[in-house]
Length: 587
Image 1 (cartoon, rainbow, N blue to C red):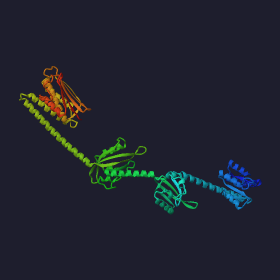
Image 2 (cartoon, one colour):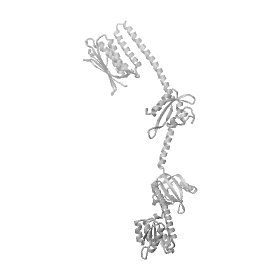
Image 3 (spheres, one colour):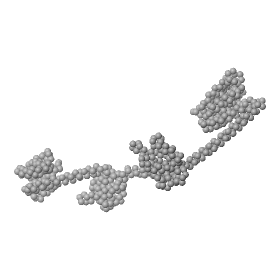
C-alpha cells in the first residue's frame, strides 16, 4: 500500500523496454510515467515532481544522455535518480558517481535487482533527507543564535562562526576563518584557553568558563563559554557557545558596591537591622539588633513575636498600634519609640524606623527597618525636663517673692500718702510700681514663654490711670494690635504709656468739658517695628517742654525709657497734644 503513493518517472528511449519495465514496476505497486527523451524528462519533472527518476544513460545517438538530464533535474529538485544502463565499464560507474549516489542498475539483471535497487534508493533518500533537514536545523540554530557560536580545531583555527560571534567581538567571517585564535588575539587571558582545551581533552566538555575577550576594536568584554568536542571529517573540533555577561557583571559590581556601602552604613550607625516577612511571620535580625540588648548572635528567635515579647508592658499597645497604622495605610511613615527588655532584665529606649515592601499587586510583603538605642538621649531629655521643672518651680517662687515685695512697696507708698503733703507724686510712684507688678503677673500666666499680651497689659494700665484720675467722664479709645512683646520690652512700653496717660489726665484735662484720650499701638511685621501713639484733646504741650533737655520729670522718664528700647520720641504740641514713640520689634 505504501508503494501506491509513490510515482516513478521512467526515462527510456526504447519503447518496448520502457513498456516492460513499467509493467514490472506497476505490478509491484508503483505509479509510472514514461518519457523517451532527456528534454521530455526535464519538462515532465518540472510539471510534476515524481518520487524517483529511473533514468536510462543512453537516450539515442546525438541526443542529450541521461547523466546530463539528471544533472539538470537535480539542479532544481532534490529527488533520487537511479540509472539504467547496459554498460558495466568503470567509466560508466565514474560518470554516475559524479552525479548521484543512488546507484545504477544493469539492464536484464532481473526484476529482483531492479526492485531492490529502487527500494534501497528510497531508503537512502529518506536517510539523506533526514540528515539534510537536521543539518539545516543545526545551521539555522547555529547562524541565528544571539550567542556567539564558533567551531575551531583544537589548535584554535577557526572553521566557522555565526552572526552572534560578530555581534559580540566585531570580527567578521573574513577576519577569522582559517586563522588561529592567537593570531587575532581574541583571548585577553591566554591561560584561560589553555584551561579550556585541557578540560575538553579530559572531560569532553567544559561548562561556564568565565573569561575576558578582546574585541576587534581593542575593547574588552566579559563572557561565559561552554564548549564540547565534536567530530568533523573524523577530526576533533571544538564547538563553543559564548554569552556576553559584561552588563550582568557591571550590575553585579554595582550591587556589590551598594551592598558594601549599605553594610558599612549599618555598621557605622550602630543600628539594629530587622527584616520581617509579613506573610510567614519569619524575621531576620542582624547581630547589632540583639547585641544592643545584651544577646549573642543567633540567640534571639528569628520571628516578629520575639520583638513583641521584649516590649515593655506599658509600651505594647502603642507600639503595635503604630505598626498597624503604617501597614494598613493610616500613617505614611513608620517611626516608633518604645522600651525593650535586655537579657539582664533592664529596659532600653529604642526608636524603630522602617518601610514596607509591596508585591506587584500592592500588597505588603516585607517590613524592613532599623532599631536605634536612644537610652542615653532619653535620659538626657528626662534630666533636662526635671531640671526645667525645678527651674520653673524656682522661677515661680522668685516671681512670687518679687510680687510680694512690690505689693509691700505699694503698701508702704500708700501708707506714706496718708501722712504726706505731697501725696500726688506718691500716687504716680504707686502706679509705676503697679505697672511693673502687672508684667510679673502676665509672665506668670502667659502661655507664650517669656512674652506679654500687650493688648491686655496696656488695657489694664489705662484702666488703672483712668480709675485713679480726679477727673471723671474721660472718654477713652484704645486701639492696640494683638501683639506679644518680651518682658524686657513690655515694661518700658508700659511705663511710657503710664507716664504719658497720667500727664494727659493730670495736666491736659484741667478745663476741657469733654475729655478724650486716644491710645494706638501698632506692629509692622514687614519693617519689624512698633509705633505707640498717645493723643488727647486737652491743653497744648507748653513750648518749654523740650525733648533734647526735658525739664519735667514725666518727660524725662519717657525719653529715658524710649532710649532704653532704641525708640524715637516725637511730640505734637497741638491742637491735640500727641506723643509718639517708634521702636524696633522682634517676635
